[in-house]
Length: 267
Image (tube, rainbow, N blue to C red; front, side, top):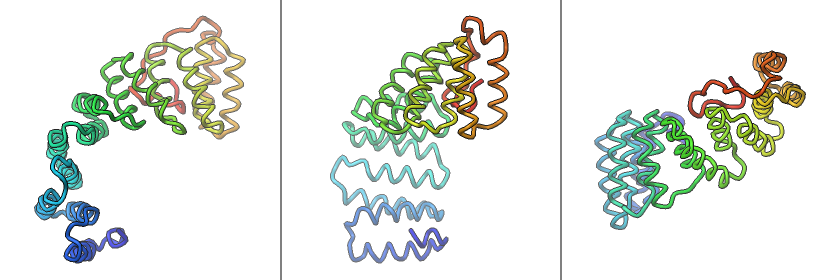
């Protein structure tokens, strides 16, 4: 890895091959060799090493296909990468690894329709980590399945002991529904986990403004400013809280772009 960081890929490959001559069943080294070869642009060699890897893992182990998918990704061959992850899913039908990897990658590429069935299959097979549940919430939200998105984010928040990504997702769902009370509950939970997170206070201020609780909203904006919130966002929220609309019954805010209604930029 040190050689790769120095852009000495050839030396890194030579070192890994030397190690494998001495220890041909070293799975970790062979996996790393696949990735270094792919990153260096030698996809045929990476495929050959993936074949060697498949001979050294137990039957039904999805690892070779996962590594092949990574190799394709490093070569910017995304359709082939997704096909490899699907092969991993087929090779190990009881394992969530293949559909999880394919689903997460598709979600990161912005392919929500490709991601959703894979993520749901991974969850069906037992995956329940915070990253998967956040991505599942995101793709469901993209499809305007608000109940499904909220369920995934809620489950993700329960296992995400310190992070806030799933709580931000819950706030996003609430805003999309025009549910200022639900958004406030999510932002309050974010603020509890991250007391010095200025964005959470901005989100609270926005929700409080929509609820007509202007005094509390102004206090939240002041706190956000103390914590270093962007001046433009602070100014925008102060204007909202000073407007007649903030003292009326809650309205329905415009639906945000899925999962980008981050508390640092409430609209």
